[in-house]
Image 1 (cartoon, rainbow, N blue to C red):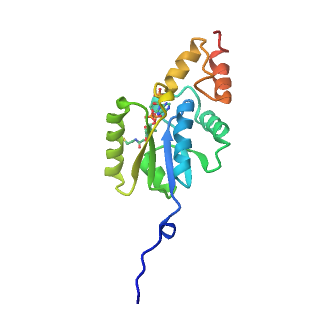
Image 2: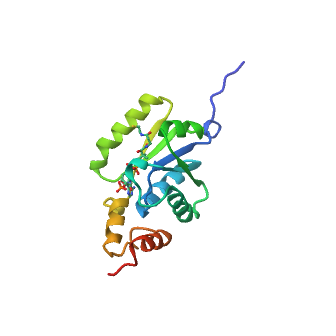
Image 3: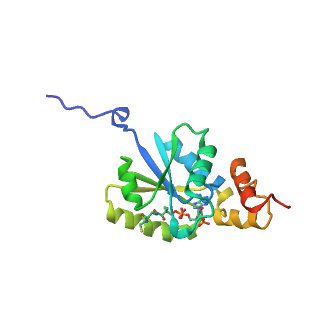
Length: 175
Ligand code: COA
């Protein structure tokens, strides 16, 4: 019997990737990373961690609802909450890929530690890093909350539903 190599399209598998975080709240930096991931993978699950230890400003339900609102235009992204170990959640979804965004060199050490820990617990789960756009390299959810809590305008950093949610918590921007 003649053996034949598979063509590239025959080898292509449907690939599901999980992009985890606390998303307290989701920022344009996160949207940048998830959009890039959605252009590479067949489907991306944005996994909103309960992260009780971080004592989030927005409830888990609010964080999921905001992410759903903001990501509605991207067809192949869904939003799911999780608690417990990330690798258990990834397996429960039938996924083998975790996406993490790298904003600056400062992210590297923590991210490699997390990736190695996760690999130790689940060797079948691979972490893929996506370089975040320079435009958002300085952004974090706590910075956005800080600016909003001091009456600053966050409309450059978050999408309108998130800006509205921040205004409900901290009051409308004063400058
Ligand atoms: N744009 C904007 N901000 C970004 C960003 C980006 N591209 N990438 C990261 N950030 C920000 C986040 O908003 C967050 O900001 P904040 O701390 O000011 O709120 C900060 O950078 C850290 O982000 P991240 O590293 O994603 O932390 P996280 O708390 O959001 O999520 C988990 C970390 C949920 C992935 C991790 O804790 C986890 O896997 N938890 C489950 C338990 C587990 O399995 N632990 C691992 C084994 S020890």
